[in-house]
Length: 47
Image 1 (cartoon, rainbow, N blue to C red):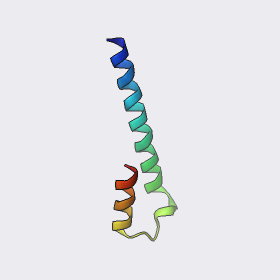
Image 2 (cartoon, helix red, strand yellow; image 1 turned 135 degrees about the horizontal axis):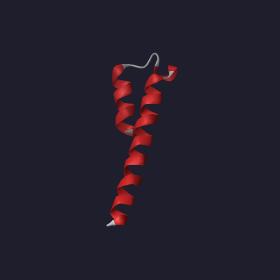
Image 3 (cartoon, one colour; image 1 turned 120 degrees about the vertical axis):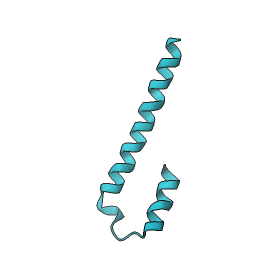
């Protein structure tokens, strides 16, 4: 049972890391000037 808990922790840490990367990207200046549809496309691609 311990292995299952370890795998879940790894999954959630990877998911959290991806989430934090997306939030950082959305908070950055690099999205300035992008159309809403461009932002959505990038989110679909990376998220």
